[in-house]
Image (cartoon, rainbow, N blue to C red; front, top):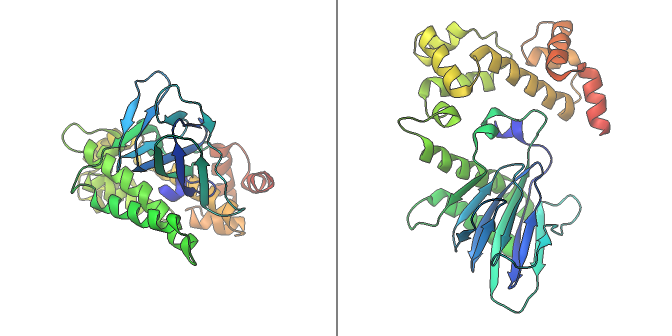
Amino acid sequence: MLAAMRAGQPYAGRTRSWEPWGLRFPAGDSACCHVVLQGACCLISPGGAPLTLGVGDVLFTAPGQGHVLADRPGSPLTDFRPVRDSGSLITDLNIPGLGAATEMLCVCYSFDRVRPHPLLGDLPPVIHLPARVGQHRSLRATVDLMGDELRQPRVGSEAILSPLIDMLLLYVLRTWLDEQSGPGATGWAAALTDPAIVTALHDIHQRPEHPWTVAELATRAGVSRATFAKRFVTAVGQPPLAYLTWWRMTTASRLLLGTDAPLQTVAERCGYGSEYAFAKAFKREHGTAPGRYRRQRQVN
């Protein structure tokens, strides 16, 4: 699902700021993770009260959520424009000043807003994970490893950071899902903690070319067809076969843009027996033929 949501290259860096300072993050297609490594700051969101962040706090902001991080409300603002070498995922940003220093780890991920995964719609604008001794150990270990690589990049740092960036996002999302799970959970927080739904999602994600039916998915999930269909719609927000079609078309768009596979091959890998049937379904979903979609998006 993370692979389906991503667009473009993520980047990570350490920011060092001395009071007074403020960083303005635009309301674009990127989600951000911020971790306070030294000092303190506050999150300033439009229409919301400032949120104080201390050492070890982790902050996630969903795509489309413009926000400001600053030492205090009213400090001068600088647009977040990190410096990085062309093609590098490592960034660097320093804001000089005369006051106390704050150091943060900042990671940004670009997501596809044309075909966003439904999970994105369930995420709150901001997820705040306060530092707590003994909690979120895997998340803390990932932050420590990223901090070490960014503090002193060496041979292989880019290769090490790439999976760590994914891990940071996954641990943040997993922690949020864990906190939302339990009696009364709804949406993807319920879907990803329901064994029957998880089994079905895994089958669909791993084998989109298979001619899945609701009955077969229910059997593999170990529940009746009626129970499975009802629970799937309640949690995921659409019927199983509608989600299957959505996933097939998302997979097709990734194959068209990321490979030079012939259209017939793409059709077969997405569960369509003929190029014609695939093209018809693709145009219905994307509004254009697959060949034209590939040419237009590659040019852009």
